[in-house]
Image 1 (cartoon, rainbow, N blue to C red):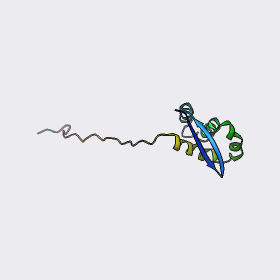
Image 2: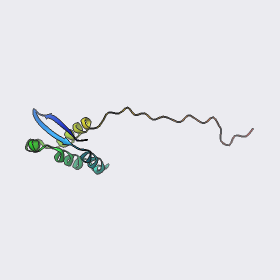
Image 3: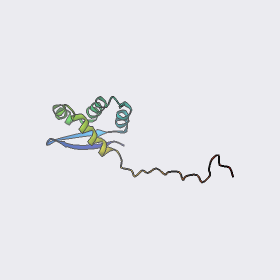
Image 4: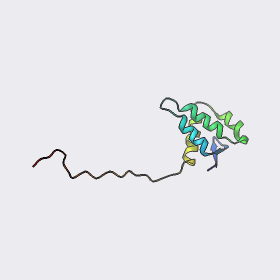
Length: 97
């Protein structure tokens, strides 16, 4: 689902339009040694045309990562997830009477 997200960054209002393909492209591009460029690309790709100039003026070291993180926190649904652990087996392997 497409979602319009408005962030205020240093008193500057920025509008982003995030779609599933944008989110998935970001996740697919990130690797243990490559996070900054995918996050920068995500932010630049999703900024609304009216906010593009303001975003470019703000971009500097670490800015895209902070903005991408805020966008992901807002875009990604919050789920309650737990893992059901298997019960220990009552049978003993290799035991003889």
